[in-house]
Amino acid sequence: MSDDAEWIDISVPITEEMATWPGDPPVIIERVLDMAAGDDVTLSRLETGLHAGTHVDAPLHFLPGGAGIDAMPIEAMTGPVRVIAIDADERIEVAHLRKEQLAAGERVLFKTRNSRLWAEKGFIRDFVHLSLEAAEYLAGTGVRTIGIDYLSVSGYEKEAGAVHRLLLGAGVWIIEGLDLSRVAPGEYRLFCLPLNIPGAEAAPARVLLQRSGNPGRL
Image (cartoon, rainbow, N blue to C red; front, side, top):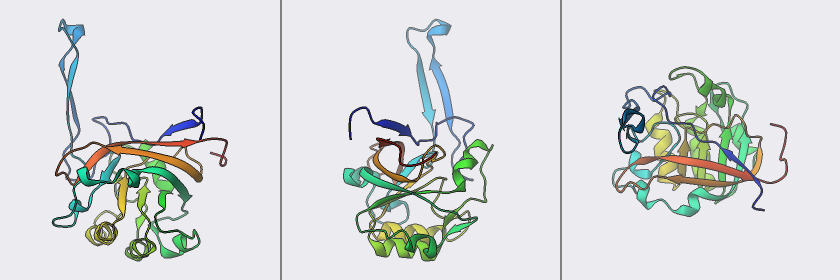
C-alpha cells in the first residue's frame, strides 16, 4: 500500500463516561498537575481495568498457565485483515461464517449492529456475540485473529468462559471493543498494538485500518 493510503482509527476513545463491562473497574482520569493552575507541567493519571474499551485478550484470560499479553506475536495483530459484515440480531452463527470461506491464518473483524451501540450511554447487555457453535467453527478453521465491535466475543452471562476457551485454546487471538461504524466490509491492513504489560491477561490497544481506494460504500 502507498504511504498516502487512508487510515481509519477503529479504537474506542478512553473516557470516564465510556461503557465498561459490569463489575469491571471504572475508568478514572485525574489531572494531577496542571500548567493552567500554575504547575510547571501538565500531568495526568489513568486508572482502568485492562478490558475497558478496545483491548486484546490473551490466553491467560481464561486458560490457567496460558500466555500473557506480553507473549502476543506481533504477526497476529499486523497484516492483511478482512472486515466481514454480519447481519444478526443476537448471535453470530455457523451459517454466517461458513459462506465466508475463512482460511487458516486469516485475520477477521466482524462488523455487526454493535458498532451503533457506542453512541448509547452505559453498557448495553443486548449485543451481538458469537454462539458456542460459531466459536468452535472458528477454532477449527485455524484463523489467527478475530475482532468484534463490542466488549466481548461472548454474550453477557452467556457461555462466556466456553466461547473464550474454545478460541484462545485454539491459538486464536481476540480483539474486543472495536468501533467499525465507519468501516465498509472489505480487505484492509491491520495495525493493532496492545500495551506491553508483562504477565497481564489483556491490554488496551490502539487499532488502525489502512486502505487504498474504496472497498465499498461506508
